[in-house]
Length: 169
Image 1 (cartoon, helix red, strand yellow):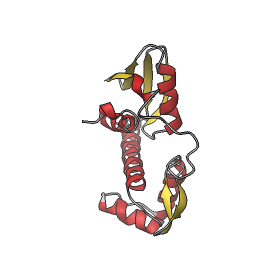
Image 2 (spheres, helix red, strand yellow):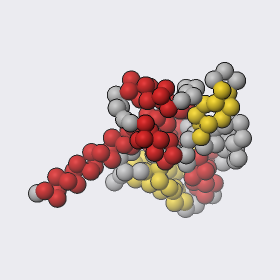
Image 3 (cartoon, one colour):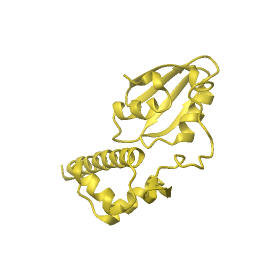
């Protein structure tokens, strides 16, 4: 019984961490934040009480960096969101136009694509490195999407909606 309780406790912590990282990612993506103190205050408003050391580890885990900003000096950004984005991901042409559908089952996502598009779409998903997704496996017209432990279907779908606007709404 003690072992079971310990496992349940660990899963609760992991879920909270996943949710916290998702909120942190959203804040960094949508707001111009220049300091860890400012991030801590924004996370507190969202209901997350954490130390500066934990925030530092979270930022490192998400590979958040700082880029120059005209108004605030330097601001936090997720990888690939700064002016020096390495590989542009096309959203109005190939490969994003090959998306057909997305369904979930047994904790995994299955994305259907037009024939021959799955490899390119899976590569685009992997290049953007959404936190909610550990990785993908592509066939010819199907992609297996493996979510991170604790990431909800909705969180995965929202992450994919950044690449596939058809998923919005």
